[in-house]
Length: 215
Image 1 (cartoon, rainbow, N blue to C red):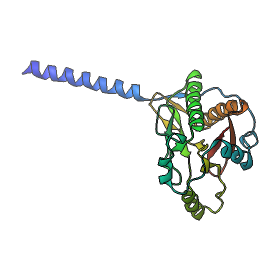
Image 2: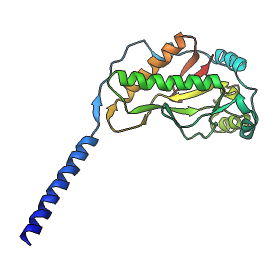
Image 3: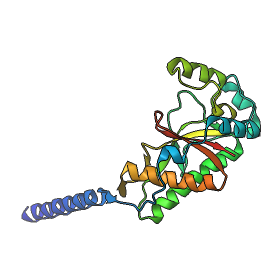
Image 4: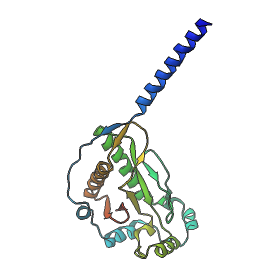
């Protein structure tokens, strides 16, 4: 009997130690990542709606009236979904479709963000896409909710998407990085692509996102 009790006591101590070590391993490491200053967000990313529209009309589809029409356009549109590079938010006024060039741009942004974060000693996050293709009836519903929403939006052409800058998707529990630093890193990634003439970008204050159109 004493041997059994002694064995159970050792087992309890061992399992308790394993549990504590597991909890310690799960505590994320706080990281301060290096950022490269570039100025004010609003003045750096200030491409107006007319240039977004011009590029969207050149590269995109003809606006669709209903969401169902998106499924009939075949290879003209690519459906996007959660992947290693980004997460799709709950879309209430848009559907997850982009023209191939815009889809490739989104992939590049997501991949470059993760690569840049890891190269600076961080990780554990990816970007969140908050708005994509809008059908005409989506825009009508949105304008009933928000009278300031544009009826002449580049989102109608499948070339344009929004990426949140105030929240990011955690993908593991290794690190914590301040949202302000993640936002700045995302902006650096976008600025580099904008300088390469890959896209137009507008910093949306009220919506908490970067409004991006492929070019």
